[in-house]
Image 1: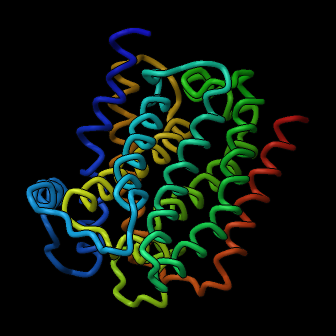
Image 2: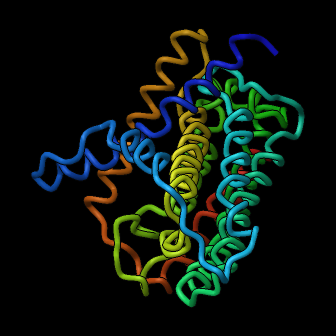
Amino acid sequence: MTVESFLPSVLALVAAPLLPGVVNRTKAFFAGRRGPPLLQAYSDLWKLLRKGAVYSRTTSWVFRAGPVAGLAAAIVAVALVPLGPVPGALSFQGDLLLLAGLLALQRFLAVIAALDTGSAFGGMGASREVAFSALTEPALLLGLAAVARETGSLSLSEMLPAVSLASWALHGPALALVAAALLVVFLAENSRIPVDDPNTHLELTMIHEVMVLEHGGPDLAFILYGASLKLWTLGALLVGLLAPGGDPVAGGIVAFAGMVGLAGITGAIESAMARLRLLDVPRLLTGAGVLSVLGLLLVRR
């Protein structure tokens, strides 16, 4: 572990709220509007942290602990992911399994906090979140397994920087399939269109946002910040696969630019597509899993 390995985590903790701002500005550009400031998320977090929290008498300690514990899981997950050729702060063989477990833990904490309120809408969103996560998690793990097979390492800080131009020349179709699968997982896990609409106000069509309707003040700030960190974590996986390794300084700059570009692409996707019907979402996520399986089979040849 070196001082250099802490840079991706520090950058993620500072710059993660910037990504939703890039998404919203891109959507505003396509809609012909000015849009909110790029740093609007920072202002929202600061405003929420200064407010008080209101808790229903029907909730227990589970509701209060969910946002804090979920944010802690997101912070640890960020420490596992490298930024381009720069390794993460935490690195060991098999840490990709820990990353998947932390993402699942963050989701589980949000689900049980929503169920603890006893709200019908919260329970509806929680059931949808769990059902869709059962399809996204295999796609994520199988995609990472394909990259691990190609690079010969089970550590994220070793396998992602090891993906080079030579790797793409040798296993280009397989890596392209994995990248497509990870893009679908990125959109689904972060509740973006076409899986979910983070800006909708129709409870019957909401998935993730309906689970946080009962939260406010600092608890909502923790949830929003944890969501930004999750956006950064999954985005870093996709950027690390697409950006070839190289010099840590130049590669880190390219990777950060790739993160901003990925946020812009997300905004473009949300501007060009409509949200899928709920019955069509499992087909999309199943397709992502199939792409990961095909990528793994091609790498094993």
